[in-house]
Image (cartoon, rainbow, N blue to C red; front, side, top):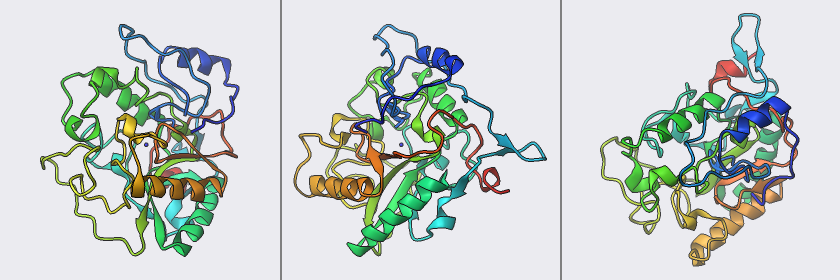
Length: 300
């Protein structure tokens, strides 16, 4: 779903829990679910056990009815309805192959500070004939736990042909393509791309349709209406690194354009993923929330 953020101090009990995870914490999160934008934790060896499930560092705010709340969060569409959305983890079109736990609605939730900064990026993108499109925003801890549990089930690989065709599933955590916890759970990180404005129609993904490698030429990959970025979204491959030497021409120029637009508004890229950005001035640098992705999580 960076040249990583500056190191951040974590509560003692969280640090202890994270050391059992055994993943890279260097950028998006992803890895994020790949590395998160924090200093790297010890990386597991090929014989290390799979990472354990992360827990929220503090309980989320709750309403009088006991429902979880995300303080200071907004629905991105309420702040800027011009930004396109394609929330993959609420659908079966992702590296797991089914909707992910915690995604009750296909919404982009962000801290208001990050959402307002993204609106400034959209203004600049539109001036150049493009629009932003987000694939993922706030990701609750239960979703990260779902990724961890999935990683322990080697038989579930229905999306391998598209999302990790050249990497063994057993290596996804060790090689940093998936990480836990993730900066997404702090609410100021998003995965996104650029689409032409107006964008072309994007055919819906149909479960069971033939899958094509995310590293294949754009004309052969899933017909995402993004401009060509050299790989598909959530592509677990070295070519997904923002400055991958195997990417040149139009795709490299497009990645550079996205990076210029985002960094100009205060976002930092995770260099392992061209699509992953975090707002540098995030309001919750040490808190990982577990409220679901739903409008009720942000409504007062």
